[in-house]
Length: 463
Ligand code: GLY
Ligand code: MN
Ligand code: MN
Image (cartoon, rainbow, N blue to C red; front, side, top):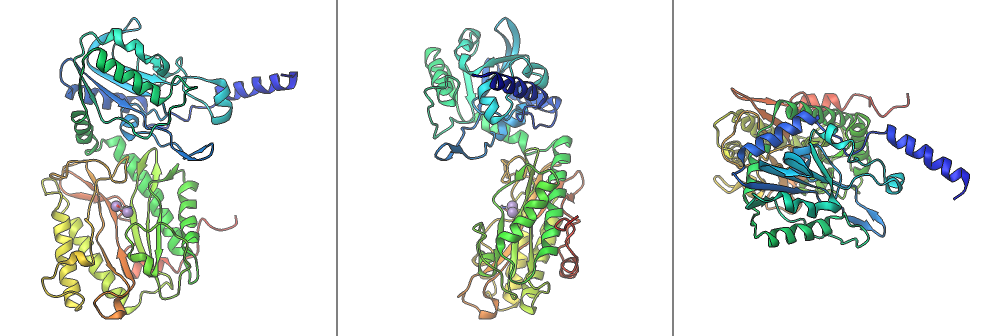
């Protein structure tokens, strides 16, 4: 290595020291510590819970997909690096001479790798930043054996699948899992892969104040994206151009990613529920269904609006739109603590059945699932389809309300209804006495949408 290269390495090392590890995109160490304490309080005596990181996924050749952290691990630590595992114990034990009830194994610093891929959390910085007193390197996982004296039951959320065993990397997830299985066998531990998932699901389905604030921020960013798309749409525009406009605003306003692949379907594509090819060009008479949400600090928004490409709804589109809107408003009205999770869906089904029967699109009493084939709600959080029990609604839950009507080309009804696909989706917080529509300010009645579409773009302009 010549002198210039050495200087360059020093400069990079100094720069990396200044950069915050990308693994700390979190809600604050205290929040995550609180989540661990809550989970520990629900564990049984003499048991340990292990939450493994998700594997890295190869896209092609030597390029991986953008890494997505295991939401459970992020929820409990705020840590988003691969090749790691959190071990949470009900009771204290001694590990590396430290009395603790939690250990996080991380891959640790690696200057050569960090020069390519960015800063990693170091063993030195991790205890203070994560507020976890026992941090060790993944490659030393076997050292846990001596600490595991009093442990008889080990709970996991599942074994990561489809791993690539990088023989050259002693800290990869594949090696970590092998060591874990050796530990389970050698100590004859009872392995439970059901209970922990259930406990974490019960926690994640009710949001804390901190989470509600972050989800509201993801929703605010998403609403701005939807408004800009409405302003930007014009006949002949391509689905991918509208997608780009929305995603530009998401990222411009600080979202780290989309929460799920954006659904931008014009015309016949609007009836495909999870269409995300987004390659077609719009025609003036088309609707465009936009189901797009930003991800902010790991949390998802999930909003759908359906706009007329021309800026004005046709008579047929208006009739169907208003049935979906009425179903959506009535379903939202059902959102209050104590209601069965399915109640908003039953309400939406009832209104859509009647509305379509009144128009002669369905028979009286005919099953509406022919044109409304999905549920009305799911939980929303770190996952767009967040885990939950689907029992009764409770204060602090955030759910979507998203009825739709989709009439494919060739359906058994008057052809004037064909290729109309409409979904209206909002994100709803259950409050003490009822609900709050987090995405409420985003226009959704016909008049407000047509007015919004007359506006000029706000973000997509030369400044
Ligand atoms: N964006 C997916 C869904 O609404 O469930
Ligand atoms: Mn949804
Ligand atoms: Mn959606």
